[in-house]
Length: 210
Image (cartoon, rainbow, N blue to C red; front, side, top):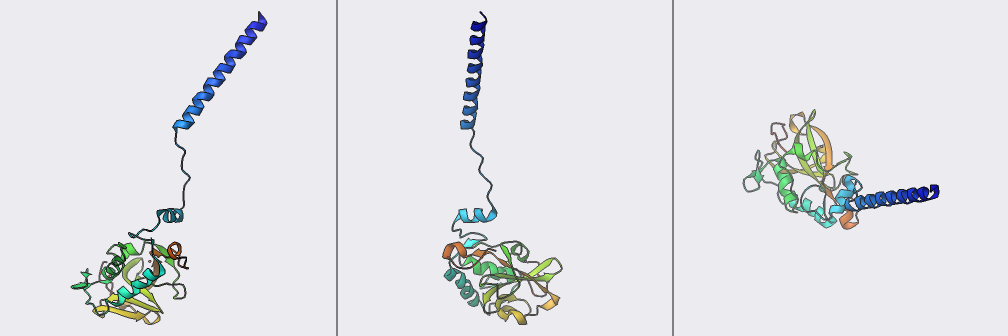
């Protein structure tokens, strides 16, 4: 009798264990696996060519055409808050217009632009055409220009009343503004195999809020 009870008890234990195993397997199959977290750089790479927004992947030829687009606007009249070359451009409007030529949608605000992309050393040896240069006082950003290579920045200048090109080492912005930083909002590494890496508009006098 004792042996019979032990046998029945063993069978019952086995059945309970098998049932629990089946339920556990069913739950694991029904629940999707949690995706591993990706770094921001991995997200950018996974996104592929992206003509809209920061870190748009461009070929080196496309990046260089930013300089060409900027130079075509030399002499354009300066206008506070302007976004149309026919009527005039302010500094962030100038940047927005040039990048829009390559399908890159940037905000019309130097302060917002100063938070985008990645920081680059304030050294023309490290800077590349298409990098954005920012100026301001304290924590306030009030002017932005586009670095086009060879130590030259192109920007819409309120003191010159037009879009001008200026040697970086000679630029002394009006109103006591200081060179605050450089940002890179385009990436040419993945698109072309080049050495680019992803990476802080308004009037020179600091009166333009953009």
